[in-house]
Image (cartoon, rainbow, N blue to C red; front, side, top):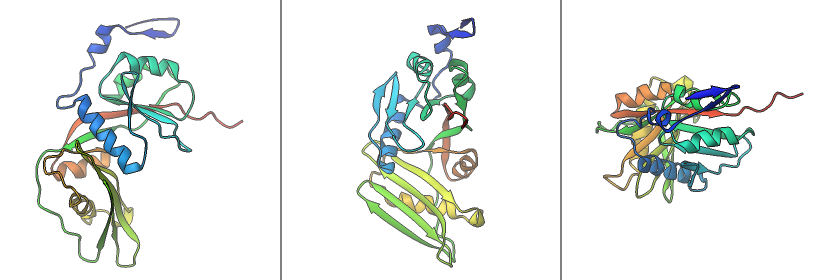
Length: 233
């Protein structure tokens, strides 16, 4: 790696030192991303810049690129894109991502790419709560209601022939530490039809602790950078 006048260049040797985490493969990442698109009603990912691009095209985001490992295309993309609304995501450490991106790219809090690696007992919905599951083809949505009818927890899942993924698992702060997260995962898992299909998700730091307690293992840090909107004048 070298720099001149503030511009950084990277050799193939620099890229190779960013090794892919053990247990992670491009096929697994693409399988998760395909199922995530199903869960969110988004276009399927396409190959682009040595990674996978999803054209999200909503009010907050135009497109995102997901890279299973550091590739020359990620570096080229970071140098090319200059407009807000674009996200780069890497299955790797945030320092690795920062090292190859221009300063206009701002880091996000890290996530964690995880897979379920062991079975645990089914978690029942706690007393005083009720669960509702709605399936729509390959998608499932679940909500757990408190006694007063308010939503205490919610989440989504989607299944393809290559992955079963969990998405947007949330528990209302007033109902945390009541076992609802475990119960919600069990409710969604009941929608799974492929017994050997890998179960995947991306977790926050807080979520990671819950998932590790119920049979999940982190297989990679999941780092994100984006270009923020300019300050209004």
